[in-house]
Length: 322
Ligand SMILES: Cc1cc2nc3c(=O)[nH]c(=O)nc-3n(C[C@H](O)[C@H](O)[C@H](O)COP(=O)(O)OP(=O)(O)OC[C@H]3O[C@@H](n4cnc5c(N)ncnc54)[C@H](O)[C@@H]3O)c2cc1C
Image 1 (cartoon, rainbow, N blue to C red):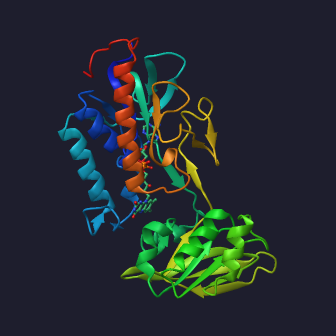
Image 2: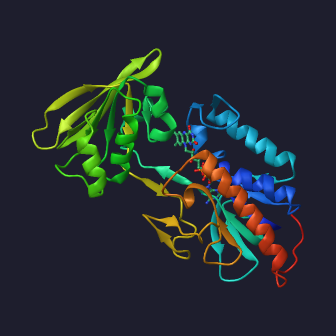
Image 3: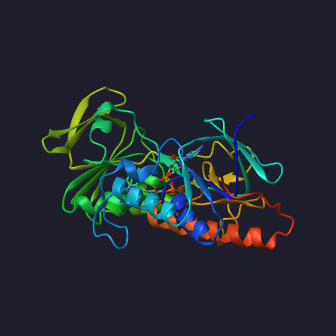
């Protein structure tokens, strides 16, 4: 028989949302179990400097996440290296299957599985990620003060990122493979009126080039989609803004989603349409997608889970995590 682990609260995901939920749930004496998933520490482990986490003028992403993990463990959250493969949402307690074969049984669930930026898939893009290549203007725009920046994409995200980046850059070039944008008209108007932004139609990014020592972007090569002609655009920052994909595989057929797959929660709450299931962080957030907002939602989810369990007299008592 499969090993079973029972808990009042199971937290799925180990990004800022998951670990913050772990801290709050542990301090509410819920003895939570947190399953880390394939990427312990989440998205911030893939970046270098983080300069907008309050209390740290500058901190390395992986270091910040190790501290969050240590904090959650120190207050009593059990952190498990495993991946949840499916959840039976049809009855409580919820039964979750995992890659290790362990069956997690929980009275309440906090889903914090995050999201992923979509990338172009170029080798050179991978090489310079975190060293000039980014998918988050809010996170990294500040590093390119007075520099030229290239943004690729044609939807709302691309236009918003391009506009935001004009706060820092001397010039922003928006590269798009068609001759019209998908972004809302009002955003397009603002884009076309902005003297710092140039739009390059019918082009796609073929390569990012730069220096090896120190590693850094010097420009991108763009290819005309009709003629195939290659042009170089010098820039220090290259922002990929072709969308994000929330990691909703566990819930997409069960919970309501919107805006391209983000889990819908009740207003001012992390409660989902299933009582006892809470969702926090980038999984639910098509708008801000920041560590601090994810952590805030993790806190909300743990407090709401605690209240749910306290109020729900029919919640079966299960033994705390072994
Ligand atoms: C390169 C980069 C730089 C960034 N820089 C900044 C910055 O400077 N400042 C800032 O505020 N934000 C930054 N962000 C955004 C920030 O990282 C995210 O907003 C934040 O990490 C979202 O937190 P989260 O907890 O919702 O999920 P994530 O960090 O996405 O973590 C999701 C977690 O879920 C786990 N998981 C997924 N599926 C499963 C499963 N089936 N079972 C178990 N676990 C699962 C994963 O392993 C992972 O641990 C950056 C993002 C990137 C990609």
